[in-house]
Image 1 (cartoon, helix red, strand yellow):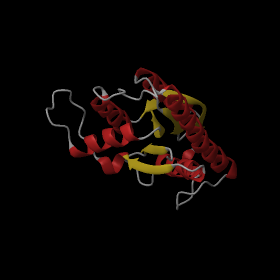
Image 2 (tube, rainbow, N blue to C red; image 1 turned 90 degrees about the vertical axis):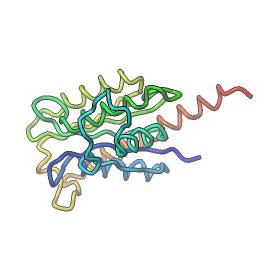
Image 3 (cartoon, helix red, strand yellow; image 1 turned 180 degrees about the vertical axis):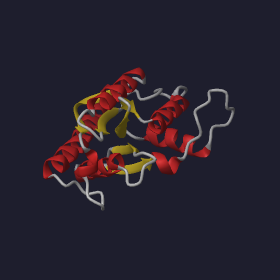
Image 4 (tube, rainbow, N blue to C red; image 1 turned 90 degrees about the horizontal axis):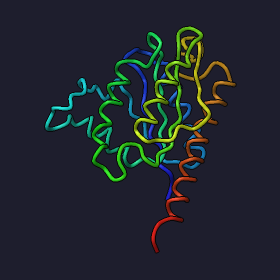
Length: 193
């Protein structure tokens, strides 16, 4: 059975460098044999997370279901004021809908992290996402891609202007697939006969 990799990211900006980077990383995952799906934060248009809502919005449920089905995740956020964007954090907050699943949250999921920055400091957003991955019981792959000066890193069609960035994003996609396969094989080995 092929590995499923879900990409979550983008921003409310048009064009979105973080969405462009995510698409390239998903190409790498697909080339490694994964079935890929992309959820754009802008298109999800999620309301602010509220734990008191009895019925979650349709797109929040869609996000939770797609995340639960995936074995691998790729997250991509712009760096805003030293951290991830509010819209991306809000999407992550809606993953609370996974708290009652079995396994809960991001347990047994492998996550690759990408950030895009207007300046030269992109790592803070990656660090924030890594904290969230750990809090939700997921496994962040060691390779991370912080892209500095992101406005110059992609052309008008969303293609990388530097082949090294494209190579790194493809490698990240492949690494998520490799890690997800490793987890799936371990789970199959431990399953009762």
